[in-house]
Each structure stands twice: as C-alpha cells, then as structure tokens.
Amino acid sequence: MSIHFICLLLSLSSFHLVNVPNLGFTTYDSAANNHKLSFSSYGNESNSGTQSFTSYGKRVRGGTSDFTNYAAGSNILQSSFTSYSELGTGGANDSFRSYSFNGNNPRHSFKTYGAGSVSGSDTFVSYRNRANVGDDSFQSYAGKSNSGSATFVNYGQSFNVGNDTFTEYGKGSSGRTSFGFKTYGLGRAFKWYNKQGVSFSGYSNFSESSGKIVNKWVEPGKFFRESMMKEGNVMVMPDIRDKMPARSFLPLAVTSKLPFSSSRLGEMREVFHAQEGSATERVIVNALEECERAPSPGETKRCVGSAEGMVEFAVTVLGPNVVVRTSESVNGSGRSVMIGKVYAVDGGKVTKSVSCHQSLYPYLLYYCHSVPKVRVYEADILDVDTKVKINHGVAICHLDTSAWGPEHGAFLALGSSPGKIEVCHWIFENDMTWTTAH
Image (tube, rainbow, N blue to C red; front, side, top):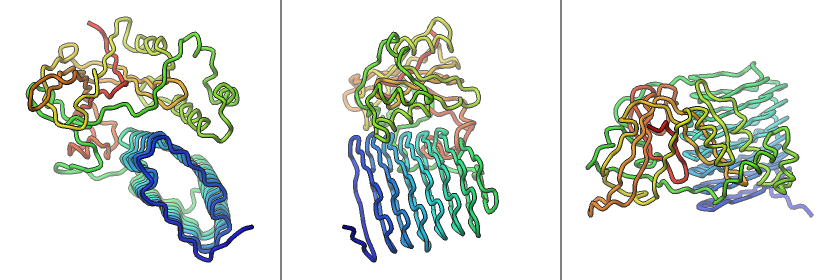
C-alpha cells in the first residue's frame, strides 16, 4: 500500500555527535507531488559515517529539498546521492548550504543527480568550504535536463586541495539550462560537460584579505606562527586526539599479498566480506581513490599498510638515515598551555620531511607524502599555572604556503594570504613526521 501526501514536510534536525552513523534512504519520497524536505544540522560532528540517498525524490513534481549545515565539522563523512531527483518536473529545487563545512576529508558522490529533470534548480553555497581535503564526484549530473539551473558558490574551498570530478555534467541538456561556478576551488576536473550555458565567474579568483581575520569555524590553536615556538609563550593547544577507529598494521608479508587496486575491487570485497553498496565497500573505494590520485606538482606520495612500507618510503624520499617524530600524548588538548624548552630539529635549518596521516580503511593505512621547505620543532608543553611538564609536542612549520588555497583555515585564523606567511601546526596523535637523522 502506498500513501501520497499533497504536501510532505519532513524536518530532520540536530542529528549530530554520532560515531560511525550509517544511514540509507532508498526510493524516499519517490513520485511525490510538491514535496518539501529539510535536513538541518544533520550528521554534524559525526565520526566516519556514511549516508546513502538512492532514487530519493525520483519523479517528484515541484517542491524543495534543503540541506543546511549538513555534516558540518564531521570526520570523513561519506554521502552518496544516486538517481536523486531524477526525472523531476515542475521546478523541483534543491539547496545545499554549508554542506560538510569545516569537515575532515568529506567525500560525496552524485550519480545521475537531476538527470532528465525539467526546470529544476540546484544551489550549492559554501559546499565543503574550509574542509580538509575532501573528494566530490558528479557523474551525469543534470544530464539530459531541460531548462534547469545549477549554481556553485564558494564550492570546495578546502584549505588543503581536494579532488572534484564532473563527468558528463549537463551532457545532452536542452532548453535554457545554465550552470554557474563562482569562486570555485582548486583540484577539479571537468570531463565532457555541456559547455553551452556554463559560466565560470571569479573562478579561483579571490580578493586579498586585509587585516586580521579570526573565524569561529577554525579551531583555536590549530594553526600558529613560527614565533610562538619560544619558551614562555602561552597558546591554545587544539584537540590533537586521534578520532579514527582503533586498527593495527599488518605485516608486510601479509599486505604484499592482499589486493589493493581499483581494478581488483571485486577481490577486495571478498577479502573484507564487503557487500556491494555497503559502508565497508565505500570505505575501500574512497581509500583507493585517495591513494591512486595523481600526486600534486612536486609531491611524492604513497599509501602504506605496514610499518616496513612506511620506513621504506621515508628512506626513498629522505635517504638512508631517518628519524620519526610524533607528539608524546594528547595532554593539554583544547586548553591554554605554556611552551617550555624548545628544540629546533637540525638546528632550525630548512629541511624536507615526510608526513604520514591515517586513512580510513579496514586495517591501519597511512597516506604518506613529501613536504618540502619546512622546519620541525620539539617542545615541552607545560601547565600554565604550575609550570609542570604535561606533554612533549612535535610541530611542523610550512615555510612556503604559496600553493595553498586562499581560504585555507590557516589564513582565516591568522589573517593573511598564500605565500605571505609561514604556517605551523602540531603533529596530531598517531600522525607522524619523518626527517633526516643527524
């Protein structure tokens, strides 16, 4: 039995602070008339979750869908929109505002989104803005649509360059279909998109900020200037706790025999007992995409699933004599601390390092990459009141920020622009940096 509502008002609000939420919406509100859907503060501050929208609002006539502050501040949230609003008519309007704002490596996939729709309108405002990296894929988005519009404003301004792919975007569309991209970020690819009716306004063209900008979305202490690394200075330490699920490295003898390639995805599903379309499969696919992405100019990168593999990569980049450093503990996180004794690695000389960050995967997997022109510091962390040592931190200062995005969180927090200042940050729990040993 099916029930149709003339006007469906569904409000999902304040769904947040969840660990590994996995949600599926299948043929949700399909064939509805004049539907109204609102997702407000949905999935905020979640850890490693997945949301799947399949045939959501398919064949809908009229109505609106509004995603506001969806997955803001989440850690590696993955969303999939398949056949969303497909074959819709009569001005179905979808709005994504502050979607995945300030998140950590959010990943979203839109497949045949709005395909064959008539007079639909999609708006993405501050979508994945100020996020760390991130990856969005739009396949056959608005394909064969008629007289629709799609607008991207401040889209993908991640402070570390993410990856966005538009494949067959608007292909075969007709009528007065238009697409607009305003202040759209770096790291994007457009393949076979409909060039008629597409405008790129202010495409990667930003006015320079003047004065000091302090933004509430950037965690205090997450970025700081090199001058702060002096004994006696008081600063806020960010939350450096590892929020990934606990996992272990596998021996190299094991990982070398396991399939790890997008061309062997079927074998990988069998190894990890991952059903097709499951959350585990999405985790695997996302890790593969990150690891198989072409390196940025001047970057050397590798994903490693064993301690031996990590050491081998560090030696390949830095030479045979290497040393690894990480912060001793998470003590002091989220509060003011005093800097104690400071040790500048290699006498404070400009050096090259290899940084390794965790990726979400069934076993412990690290994304390692070379980081040129840095200075690395070790520092005792003291309690502000008692002056007692509570931690021993490792910080890295990036001296060349000219290739960073203008809306990198560091510039928002410190008040500058790419290439004009150095930027430092602590090495978080279970992340690490390798340098040449002396």
